[in-house]
Image 1 (cartoon, one colour):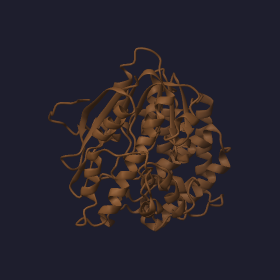
Image 2: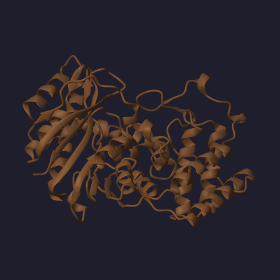
Image 3: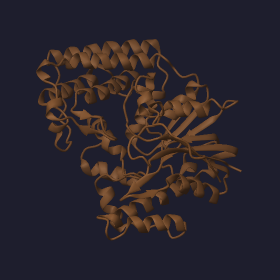
Length: 411
């Protein structure tokens, strides 16, 4: 197993979601845990022929869209239905006629809102919703959400594109802040005076941004499939030549936390229980009931853990660490689920297929979890060859946290 020699690493913002923000469709919606299209492009550019490229953890469809833009076939799976919808929206082909129809429907929707000539949708049942939006912002969003359903037929390209723009606007006019590792909320001194803010102009700007990206269609093709990454053979009808992915990290950063506003407004979530149930089905999920169920979780005895991982778990579970046992169980379940996923790969890979996992290590109570080593050990145990670990960048938090590319070849 090869590892990268120790070198001085930089944070490299171009290797994070920040690079995506103004990169066409990749910048349509922000998701802090998402990885950079720059990394994906560097890996794809090494392909010397047309490939079928798999991302088992779709996220915002970065890999699938990048693969299609380079003429490959991108196939991606995702357990979260909102991300499946968004991935399909982001990778679809749009005609000039559909783009113009979307613009007309958007203007018509804003006109209905301005004339108060539409019955607003009910305010979503997001806990403490006033923390997210002011009364004025909520009034606008409820009316605009209803108007979009009036001016564009559901499940059409215009309706889809308008909803993507709506999602972009609802964050832009919210009190969400992104000056930390994950999403937080603005302080009172940072909040704007909404009576002087033009919500309609914000939506127009966001719609312009979405439609500008929609004009550039990928030359390749994509499939965005709703599926569990632990059971890939159930949904993939033909093998893949390469895997490029960034799975959830073992750091308790749940996608659900940032996705909740979109999912509530678009009807994918009805209450907090729904969010917890969905997160429990996802690898690394920790929202709501997903955390409480860890107490009773029992691992599959057939999936033995290495002595190194057992030692790390024991250190995390030390009695001096508050909630240490629970967090040790979280880490144990994370690697249990990841191993299940990795074990499903051979059934969907062609001979000599190359896999790349962009992963970050983690710390709990000062205990370093060398995630990259455990991925490499698992791949080797499953029969992969040429297993290598390459340090990609230093992350923006603790000095010991690094992002790696763990790669291997299927026989």
